[in-house]
Length: 160
Image (cartoon, rainbow, N blue to C red; front, side, top):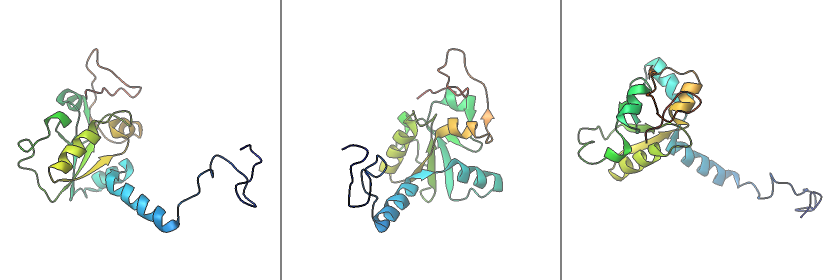
C-alpha cells in the first residue's frame, strides 16, 4: 500500500493509523493495567519530598556496590539474585515494593519484581530506573563510581 492508498472511504493510509485505535473501554482497561505495574519517577519524588511514602518502599535491585555508589534516598538494597523467602522474611506484606535498577536498558528491576510477586508481594517497577531519576535532577545519595565500572552517560554504573 502506498501513501495515497485509502484504508476506508475517507482515511488515507499512514503508519500511525495502520492499526486502528482500540475501543475506548479497552484502551482504558489496558492503560489502567499498565499503571498498576509501573510507578512514574515524578510521582515517587513528589511523595518523597512531601514525606508521604506510607504504603510503599523503594527497592534497589542491583548489586550492593551499585547501591553504595548511587541510590534513591530511603531505598533499600536487595539484588534481584538474592530475592527469596529468607531475604524477605521480615518484609511487610501490606506495602507495595517499587523496584528499580539502572535504566530502561536494564532488567534487574523486572527480575526483582517478578521474584517478589512470586513470593506474594505487591510490586511495581520504577520507570527508567536510577538513570532517569538522576537525569531528572531528583535527589540521590552516594555519587561515586568505582574505577573500571560500566558507566552510562549520567555517571551511573550497572552491576546487575
